[in-house]
Length: 475
Image 1 (cartoon, rainbow, N blue to C red):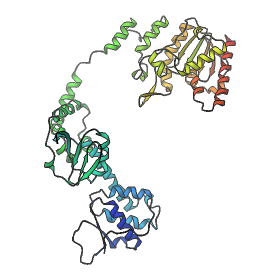
Image 2 (cartoon, rainbow, N blue to C red):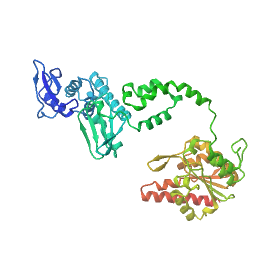
Image 3 (cartoon, rainbow, N blue to C red):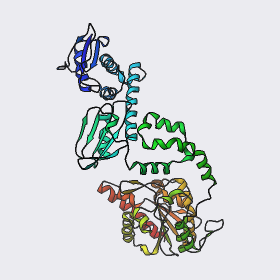
Image 4 (cartoon, rainbow, N blue to C red):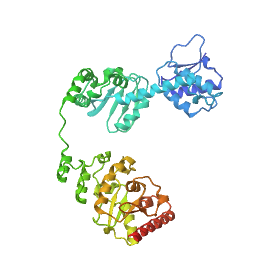
């Protein structure tokens, strides 16, 4: 039996060097053994200290990444399992792709358990305040299911970069001094403080966020296994909160409905019509329509928008231009087409001889649909259901303005005006007869801003101006 001695339980580099040497010497898996520390060997063991590695044996990166995790598992035979896989990889180079193989499946399951233990450490470490050399020092005692301290500690260094902290475990310790992460020996529970004054605030917060109506005890224990409860301050509250859950849920159901949102009530009051969305409501003016849209709940877009943005222009305008939806700047200003796309439109109108002050400019959708990305709000295309829900407002504007010609900018605007999906590139520039007006389709000005090639952008802008000239002729 060939035996390699490793420095510690997570000595991946030591195992890798020994495994390379064994593999180069042709030591079969059943004749190879890995020992941690200076333990007692067998009577017939040939103890082989880890020295210089033999010839390189190429293995897939997937195996190396898997091995780095499996080494952290608490199972005693993990080194033997990994060497068995390494031995087989020479003749079976695609072995790591065969997830049904017994050894591969076993190793992947152990790696999964290690990753789960790392996740639980991130979720259940609780720091307690202590004093060290006159400075605040936060200390946590944690007992991970597997040896994941070094794997997980960088997460805490990033998450709590301005705190001096220590995480003590039975396997080893991690220390962060706000600049450097270091690791130390195993610790015991009595080395960490038992409690601190902040825990009362944490328990109060935990109890206040506990929702009895959504309690699922088995699911909770699956996500927060009882083995971790001993080191969680809030765990002392769980039995009492669970026991009182049914009564609290019944009280929540029996409680009267809260008072209406005062901001919405103020808006409705300013409208002067609490019945604004009752059957038969018809706005009598553009001003009334603009107030009414602020209380619109026909689709969910109002939740994330600053305000509804209706059209702007003279009531008797012969030309109505319909865009897609307010952008970021329009949402803040409460006016349509004041951003970059609006500037492109204004320049094209001026070149065509159309005065923007004579045009009623609006959008098919009245609220800004977006998603946050850092500090920015990124435009998202409205769904067909949202366009359909907002058509009521667009039709109300058309009924009040009574335009002779309607120019739609982009497919969303065309859908809002025509009530059907269209291919703008195929129907562009063709007058379409509507019951109340003539419609003409073209692209949205923002499309011109997104064309990276300068020559192609200029060509498309000329086509856009040509469409506006066609509108001018219709007027």
